[in-house]
Every structure is written in C-alpha cells, then in structure tokens.
Length: 135
Image (cartoon, rainbow, N blue to C red; front, side, top):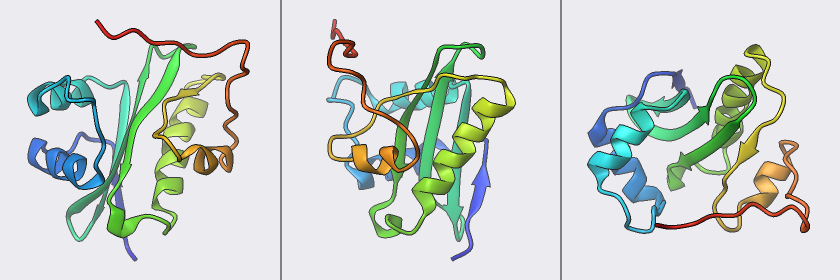
C-alpha cells in the first residue's frame, strides 16, 4: 500500500472524520473546533494519507529542548496492524532526534502499551507515576 506522510496539519474535516472513526475520546471536554485548534498549535505533527484520505495522525507537544510529549496518535481501524502506526511513530521520534531531544514522554490509549513498548517506550515506575488534574 502506498502512503504519503505530511508534516502539515490535516483539514478540519479530515481530522474530525479520523477522530470519530478511531473512537479516540477527549472525554467530551472539547469541541471539534477546539481540538482542531489544539492540533494546529502542535510543535510537530504527522498526517498519513492513502489515496488522499487521512488514515493516520500523531503530534508532539514540546518546548523544543527537553519537555516533549507525543499524543493524539490515531490510525484508521481499516489500516491498523499494517505498520502505519510504526511509520508514524518513527517519523515523530526522528524529529525529536534531529532536534537533540533526549527524553520523550507519551500518552497512549488503554490497551496500546505493548505497541509502544515494541518501539522502546517503558512504563513509568510505580513510585514515579504520571498524574493529571481535570479542572
């Protein structure tokens, strides 16, 4: 399958469609307009297309030095388990390497830890958990 990687944000319509198809959930806290604004404000993002259809997306939030977070990684269900997610992640990590970033953090969906572990990611130690607060 021929795919095209693009470091420009997808159109809002394409993003919404992929977001809905993947079942990715922002807990209903944000509108699609807000989510689209958020991805457009990313430090770096990758969109993957097949036949001009958006089938994958991922982004990095970073200060460009040491705080770096990969999030919102989505692959259309019809294209999962075909190496597309791996290509997307390699592109995101390559950008970090080019910029000299040494520590990359990641948010992942429940049940996807094994995929990221195969790419070298490790679960945080139990005595140093990540934390969150919803306001």
